[in-house]
Image (cartoon, rainbow, N blue to C red):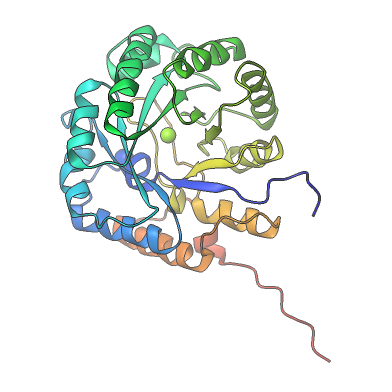
Length: 307
Ligand code: MG
C-alpha cells in the first residue's frame, strides 16, 4: 500500500447519542447500555454515550446520568458526553464522563435554534468549559457544526469555518471536529476545509463528522482519509439526525465505514462481524429498517481458489 492513506483510522461511535437522539420513541436505558457494551466489545474505544442538555428539549437523553452510572469503567475506553453549556458540563463531570465534547455552530441562526445562544456566546461558553475540564482532568474537544452548510442560512464560507476553528482552538481542545451536521457536504469541500484549517492550525488534530442525508457521507469520509484525517465519527446502523435541523438524517454507518477502510488496508481495531451483528440487533430494537448497507449485504469474503 502506498503512503497515500493513513495506516490507522480511529472511529468515534456516536450512535448512542447522535444516533438515538432523533428517535421519536424513547429508547430504554437498558437497551442503550446493551448498545454501548456491544460497541465496546466490537473494539470501539471512544463512544458518545449521552448529551447533557435540557431533557425537555431532547427527551431521548433524559437518562444521561443513569446511563453513565451503569456503564462499567473499562481501561482505554472513553465515554464521551456532549455538553452545550456550563451546566451541562457540570452534569457530565458529576456523572463521570472521561471526555466531553462541546459544539459551536458555524451559523448564528442554527446556533440559536440548537442551543439558544449566539455563536459568539457559545464560543465564550466553550472557553469556560475547557478551563473547567482541564482543571478537572477531563479530556475536552469541540466541534464546529454545520461547517458544510446551514439549513437556515445556506452556504457557510470556508473562511467562517476557519475563523471559528481558530477561536475555539484558543481554549486548548485536544482535537477539533468539523461536522456536516445536516449532510449537505461533498468531497471537494472536505479537502478544502482540511487544507484551509491546517494552514492556520497545523498542529491541531482534526476529526470529521458526516451525515449521509444526501448520500455523500461515505464519499466525504474517503476524502477526509485521503486528506490525512485519522479520526472519524460514525453510528452503527447509520441511525441519527438532528432534532433542530429539518430533514437531517443518519450519520455514516460505522460498519459500512469499517468495511471500506478494511478493504483499503486501513486498520480500525474494530471487528466488522460484531458491528454487523450489533447493527442487526439495533434494527430489531428500533423495529424498522435502518440505513446501514452492511447489515443487509453482509461482509464480502474473497474465497481462496482451490485446485
Ligand atoms: Mg450529527
